[in-house]
Image 1 (spheres, rainbow, N blue to C red):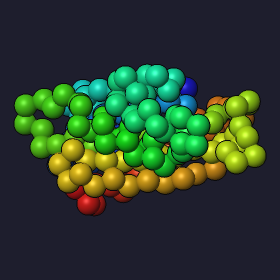
Image 2 (cartoon, helix red, strand yellow):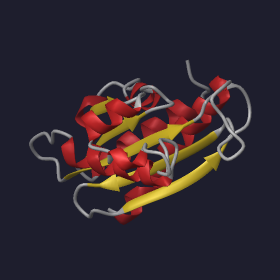
Image 3 (cartoon, rainbow, N blue to C red):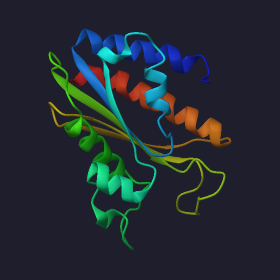
Image 4 (cartoon, one colour):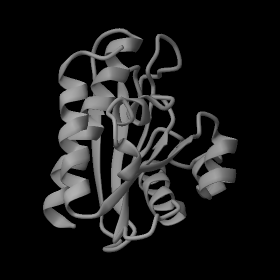
Length: 173
């Protein structure tokens, strides 16, 4: 299902979060749960991965994660934006159910245009925004990306980058 580098990185992320007694949640749009799937490929992942929000539509982003409606209004930043990625990650981190013994939740969010259609001159196919947020430190990191290739390549690149951001985020939690 995934190129070999994704499961290896997912396992590394799980080990790092398990060591620090942190849990992970996801808020996914264009990846439709693929980050959650990569993390849960590994036995024992339930001690680290607590929940995922798949919010493909704008309505789901507003209802499930509380993304501000103004983001989607005319003149707003739109679904594929830093603002929405940050709000998605923050909400997932804050709304995730923490199991006993967990110190905090770190959430990763992805929103983008995987194609083949849906792009524009301003936001072409392959435009992806990824954010990571902590329920404990309230810190949020964002990365704007542009990935090349077909829908599968864009989604896999998004998953890999999201996992890499989760791994890098451990240094600051």
